[in-house]
Image (tube, rainbow, N blue to C red; front, top):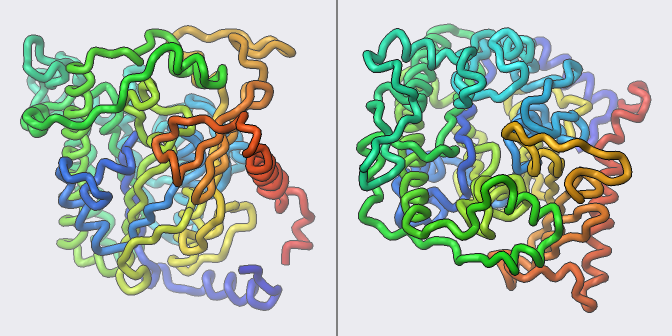
Length: 494
């Protein structure tokens, strides 16, 4: 809602005078690469997620939530700035944050909050000092990537506590029925460490009268799919329905950037089905590991006596295709990558129930600021979680998905990278239609009402060109308007 000058001044003055202890706490819990359909609360009758199901039942379950990018860093920065990737400019992984971007943790710290983070941040540089520069007072890092292990507090902790610390934490047991069975015991895994340290920091924060913002971030269920006992066999006797096979001919019918992603490096579209079944079983096991730790954190919050005045948000940075469309991982705009869980519990303020409207992760920051009694931020582009949209948007940079792993290809002006003429790609999705647009390379149009699996690309259908144009117009309007406040003199904004 637009503010008049008087209402804006009253809001900002009231926020400045409010006693910090009267404001609610904020507990933000993230999993990494978690599919929307891998919660019992979302209709999955095979997976065991009792604690997340309890959170969903006690709060608002936003079943129409979408990320702004199907890749870690752009998505995470959008979540905590409330701004789109093309605005905050963190378009690919392992790129530095623009120091002018203001993260939620800084806004809350400036309002008197204690701020802390445990687990994966995925910022660059991957250091605690850099994380503190974004607004965290306390930081315990573990990004789960070997290149960042020198900065990992988990790796240091394990070195001091695990008698077998010389064994890499992703080592699997040779000859096990589950080829992803982990060797190290559960109590020494990154997942357990993140849960344990989150509980510890929560206890310390709750002992202070000041409100707190605690960011708890798990690396799982992100690949590699290593899972320790007992989670390696939790789903061992269950046959999980697998995605249909996709042929090379079918892949070659897709737009070139999509082909490049599916076929990059060591393509897995024709993976052995037994191995794929164990990937799904291990992925489910990893989700149940995260669920167990989330239950411990929620129980710790209850014991602290602060649950009634704490906003709890659970979400993820993107999903996982798990070989749907022949694709490992994410990076493209299919539903399994961009449609994500978003659970919010705030007793007395957020009514429990299912919220089916379309929302975006940029909508989290304005909602939290409102619930905390803080003024709206002018450059935040989200509109709040209870202001459902008629369309949601996502974007990604194509070189991110066809390079990496030491195989970086040069961008040639006028030619692009590996035949991809332009590096940028955009998605717009309404309740019925989805358009994935690749400038110079065509696109994908899916009728989600008739084709929820996104199998039949209608982009070139003669009878649907008006729909294609309408969806392109939505993209154009979004790109023009999202940065409008950055281009207007501040004196006009009131």
